[in-house]
Amino acid sequence: MKRTLIQPAVSGVATDFISDACLADLLAAPPAEAARVRDVLDKSRAKQALCVEETATLLTVTDPRLIDEIFATARELKRDVYGYRIVLFAPLYIGNDCVNDCLYCGFRRSNVEAVRRTLDPNEIRRQVEALEDQGHKRLILVFGEHPAYDADFIAQTVRSVYAVKKGHGEIRRVNINAAPLDHDGFRTVKEAGIGTYQIFQETYHHDTYARVHPPRTRKADYLNRLDALSRAMEAGIDDVGLGALFGLYDWRFEVLGLVTHALFLQRHFGVGPHTISFPRLQPASGVHFHEQHLVSDEDFKRLIATLRLAVPYTGLILTARESADIRREVMEFGVSQIDAGSRIEIGGYTEVGDAQCMEREQFQLGDLRSLDEVMRELVVDGYIPSFCTACYRLGRTGEHFMEFAIPGFIKRFCTPNALTTLLEYLTDYASPATRAAGEKLIATELARLEDSRLKQELVARLQRIRESSDRDLYF
Ligand code: SAM
Ligand code: SF4
Image 1 (tube, rainbow, N blue to C red):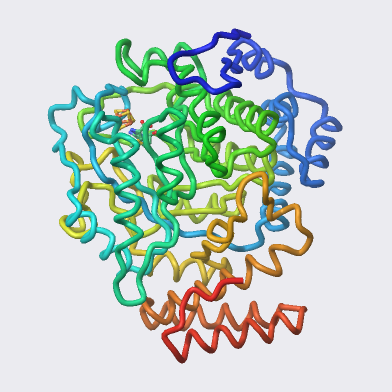
Image 2: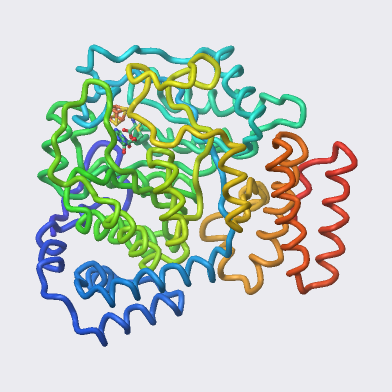
């Protein structure tokens, strides 16, 4: 393991904690005995995080019966920890200028086909209003890496987004996916009130990282990127999001990289990542990338199930890069957040038609359904879509607060908040068919509530939402 300090803006714990050789050795080991695999599954069932070796034990299983047990346990754990709630959000691309040349990305600087643009404040307002008109309450703002998109610019953009209110519409949580900052930069964006700061390592495999991020670009510095979320945490950002771009290297290696990173943060900061993302490589403008490591649908399902089992309390994000069918199929193995109604062309929420415009977006999306269609499918399938933002707004974040550590927290807070925010959506934005299906789900969930005082309070709040303009009545 290399222990190289990195410059210029390192965290106090900056080390390269990824050893390619160690991870490769774990994956080269013969499949473990069935009893050992079942021990690991028992540990997950007991809601304990797995170590890297235990995660590798699950990844090297080849026996189809044991693979089925992995899926069944992931399904069970998802149900136990998260219930049927699925949190909804939408991406908002702010600008696609970029100094980097990542081989996989439509925004790469050498892509002459890309239409370059940065939204001005009026354009941002129009995009946010369009998102509020759909019913969204949670956004992730996405930026290329460019000197113009510095911490002050990101912070100002966040403030502008929070300031846009239309009818009952407002954005209650703004997350960020942007290039790594230094400590001061992370402090600046935290002061603007961001929720999660996401930075994907893309690939944890050093040689692959060097191949897809050309030298003499900012992003070529593997260690600086690996250290970025540690700096964010030192700067006081409690909720950070990890991710890997699946398809660049062996998916099993990337899962081990993500778990190693999650455990590193847990060890040094007392809290693991808030979320993990696992985008699969998609076609993109100007990108001619023949990859031998593209992940099949079956392996995709397996990687989600394995992550669920390895980090039981970390949210898993599945995006509209995937088709509607795949999203529906893999959701049950551990996904806790999805985006919906997404457009990722710059200005895409007001300016483009049904067809995607590849030159204006980073990559191609697989699921272009409206938020209303996705909401209807979710409630019909028995999921409880949630726009809840209560914890973050009440300071219930990071190490100071672990919703899972408090007995009954999900029943007492998360489910009621999911139902009030669902009803806000149904009342203010849903089509008649979605509203009818959603009301039925709310009635079923109310009937399931055992705590009569809580039920009474919840029924009263739901009534206020139906009969008045009172909103945002969180527990
Ligand atoms: N520019 C910032 C950075 O690189 O950190 C922000 C990230 S980028 C706008 C969002 C993420 O999209 C990247 O981190 C990458 O994982 C993902 N991405 C890039 N090209 C992709 C592609 N062709 N298919 C799927 N995801 C892609
Ligand atoms: Fe730029 Fe990010 Fe795309 Fe790389 S992934 S080219 S840094 S926008």
